[in-house]
Image: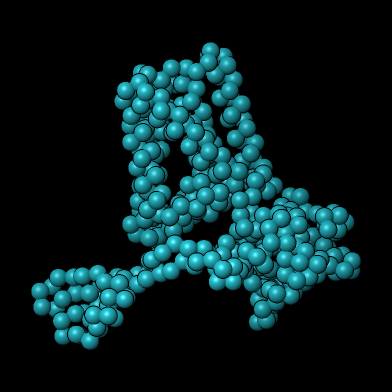
Length: 372
């Protein structure tokens, strides 16, 4: 039992620290994921959507602290029971996501590692078993160092977590795991599996058919449905259209960048901007939240940038009343993925991301020019 407890202690502690760290780096990203869970179409607790960012920040820091406490062997009863409550909560979310196919990515490891819904659930089941072992055998968890050193290490880890989260919220994530990170080639990221010579992901459709004679139901995929000509036997089989769903048949390569396009007055100018050597992209995911001061900054950098040979494009999902520059429309989810700021500035050269700036660090044209 002692060996199982120590092994579980290491695995759980390390995983919680890693999971918490990738979330703490980007609390805004986790808050978007929590908003999905809280939305009317999923758990239907919309009042929590307004506090998704504080909750995301708390969960990120709490995971790291719990992992550190476990590895250091401090407050063993509190730590093990807190771990159990936390993992049961996450297990419920991942099961709900997988079973009802509501949220396709749990956000367990932020954007650093994408897991399929059922994979996330099975991972949490394994962690639950390991944490139950810790709860049962917590008497075998002993402090790793002397008490003053342990307390100092926990304090340092907590402060570091808070600082990392603060930077991720008020500036930009210290580490960008997304496909739009600095240095990424957006043109390459948009290429399909066929263009790159990879095997693409294939899908199949599942149909639920009800037998009109005995009331039984069967589930068949589209190939069997066609090969057995079940669609012809309407006197026996009736399709339940509401239960028809598409699932992955074989996992393959999927382009990391999708729904990325510039809709400029009905014209798709994506290729134009991704082939230009000097592009200032101003991203506004939430048009309704833009202040007059922010609009002034956008207008200023737009005018100055164009005067110095830059192509400047402002993208949003809605009109911006006080912004004088023409607006191109872009998918809101894509904009929220590109940059965790409203507005945010992205410098692009021939499709490659050269720099990104939060609204709190709004750049000058001179700063942008130095990045090229």
